[in-house]
Length: 313
Ligand SMILES: O=C(O)c1[nH]c(=O)[nH]c(=O)c1Cl
Image 1: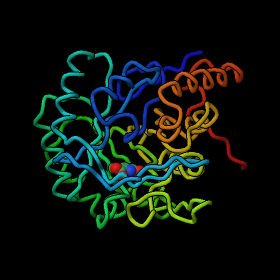
Image 2: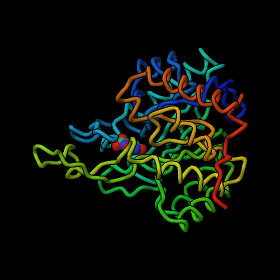
Image 3: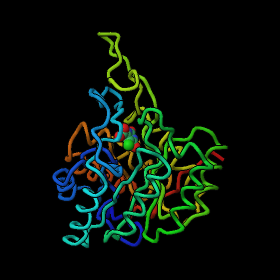
Image 4: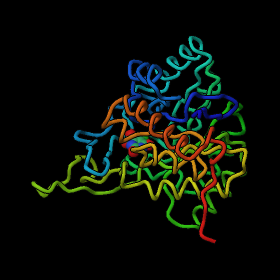
């Protein structure tokens, strides 16, 4: 059996990648991903200017996952663009994803995409509409009108391939509304989900929160979020034009979790919390475990079961 994954015209050795934010802050970490068993990788979400981010502690691993309120620390868009251009020149056969966000909101999103459009970078961009951790800044993707306005503005000048990173939604009306917005545009993919925003974890010895920013509120990742992640992958797959691929992110600890995301319709798979906890070896283990599942079920390729979740009707 083969774990080959086709995504926007390229065949990756396997569907696994890091989730933006984990192991992707600088060139050294990206080189680590590029030489790991991951099929591809994505950079830390960039803002126009470099940012220190929120005060520490701001990321904590907990038994069933992680909580973070990093606050968009990054080296600035020009750093990642320079790295990306060098990388696409040195390894044209190994496409990757450049993640871009915004600290200041709508106008910075537009300016950042203009900078990428005007640059020599020709690869995929993951437009992060779902950072939950910038105090005072609402998540773009929870404002359906603003999201539509932003994508309309971007598509008026942007000609390179990109997709969007979405937060989790928890209501069928919201699945319908975000899909209705996204289906209007020539997006190459949608990545579901970002962390489940503004959770709270309490240390059982000190009766204290565990992260400093926002009084301890932070995005939740890991085992906690798999049911929500699977639901969002499935709901968006059912609603989006087939030309828009899905990246599944959230709660992937084992080959079985990866298999379930593929059953729901994901094409690529991102790993955040478990990569943080386990290191780059997580990709070797996930490939081995997922391959064993295909063999056990008699599948030769992912295409044979991708999106084929059964229901009880
Ligand atoms: O606090 C962060 O940097 C952060 N943390 C997240 O969990 N998701 C994001 O998209 C971002 Cl941008």
